Length: 109
Image (cartoon, rainbow, N blue to C red):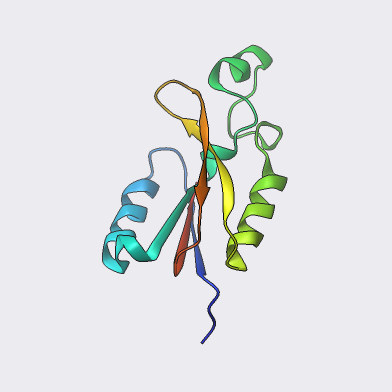
C-alpha cells in the first residue's frame, strides 16, 4: 500500500454532470478523504478577457495547463499546493487556496 493519494479524473462536456458525479463520489468516499480540484481554476483569462480576445475557456491557450500539471504532480507526491480559484459567478478570480492532498484527489473538468 502506498501513502500517495489516488487520483481520479472526471471529464466531460459542459453540463454533462461532472460536478454532480464528483460530489457523489466524494460523499461515498467521505468528504474528509477527498480533495477536489476543478480544472476551471486554471483558466489563464477571466470571462471578460476571453470575450475580448475571442477564445472560449475550452481553448488550450486559455488555460495554464503547465501549472495544472505541476500541481497534480505535487499532490501525487503528497505535497500541498496554492491553487488558483476561478469564480464562476463573477467570471473573475478569487484569492488562491492552500490545498493539501487527501487519500483521494478528484480532478474535475
